[in-house]
Amino acid sequence: MTDRPVLYTCARSRGLRATWAAEEAGVDVDLRILPFPPRFLAPEYKEINPLGTVPTLVDGEAKLTESCAIAHYLATRNGYTDLAIAPGEEDYAEYCDYTYHADATITFPQTVYMRFAIFEKEKGWAEAGEAYAKWFEKRLVKVEQRLEGREYLCADRFTVADICIGYALILSQAVGLDDRVPDSLKAYRERLTARDAYKRAFAREEEGRKALEA
Ligand SMILES: N[C@@H](CCC(=O)N[C@@H](CS)C(=O)NCC(=O)O)C(=O)O
Image (cartoon, rainbow, N blue to C red; front, side, top):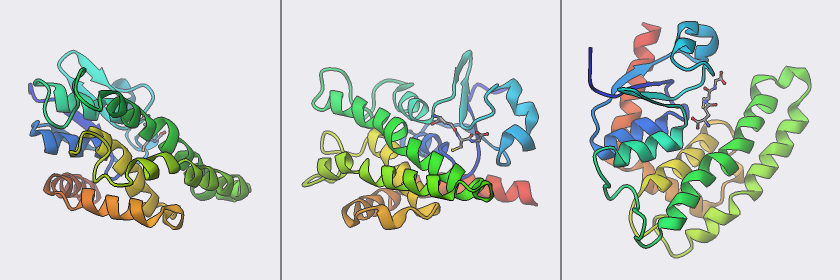
């Protein structure tokens, strides 16, 4: 038995938002790396999350399956930290907006692109994949404008909103969408991935991934 929150994820998936937030917030999570896709390669995981998607965080009776929600939860689980923005604080509204924007508006077309242009391209869907790549590119404009003259999205400090948006930019690089990312956002990504907590999170996930291969 453990009273540490258990984080189920796959290395480099959206769960990196959660692993990264745990490292930033200093929450000791029991990290369980699964093979991808767990739906097929670890079917028993569906008893924990019937969707079969990652990440899932189990914290006592609580169970969360949305990466951005998990990142916010870990940053506030033991009380508000500087990683989140509390109601009444400057940029609270923007903090909420960008944290949701990350998955709902930006990662969404990335995921459809990946399915059509990479995972199932032999079905003749590559053209549709390219359409989603273009859509993804157009959707970066709001973040690009927001970061003009700013280092971070909200309240002049690094927050979970940066983790959530930052992951979408990390994913772009991994899946061949980077020629659509403007230089200003590449520089922002460099700032984020230079953080020690990001490096620790990435290394923890890789260690778990390699252990699966051994
Ligand atoms: N909105 C959810 C999406 C979760 C999701 O679709 N995760 C992907 C990995 S990035 C997954 O598990 N794909 C495998 C599958 O759908 O079977 C989140 O942000 O956590």
